[in-house]
Image 1 (cartoon, rainbow, N blue to C red):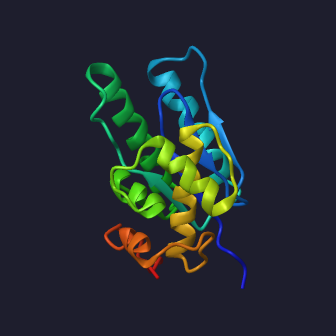
Image 2 (cartoon, rainbow, N blue to C red):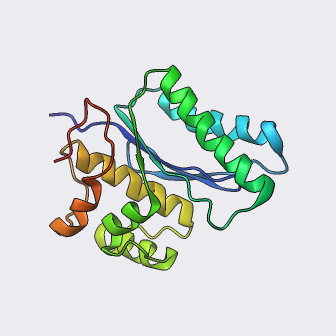
Length: 174
């Protein structure tokens, strides 16, 4: 059986993390672009891998607690722009809240960035220094888990963090 093609996306206005179906990660930045130009640039970078065919995109849900003003609105705009393009192309996607992703990855819903990075290193050997890529790798891993092709061996309590995720109807949480 062929492994599913899952794309993990941690959207960010400054450095979006993407984990590709083959497992490699990248950090997408847009230089000095601002406003709608920045949103279009980042969305285009996310949608590029989608055009090669994916079975599922797993995107981190919005987390606006540390933002205010225009940054809050622009981050929301980025998130919805990506969702809009995925919907428009008929690409199945799942949204994982940050606390659920942290619980899945580390066992703690309030894990720090360092906890997430260390958990990824301990479970996969990947030593990523960019937090956005770390989250994207975990998002991809969660999607692979949901599709019955886990890429990490996690305790049941951590895997259970994915049970409340609204997976697309074609995806059954294992």
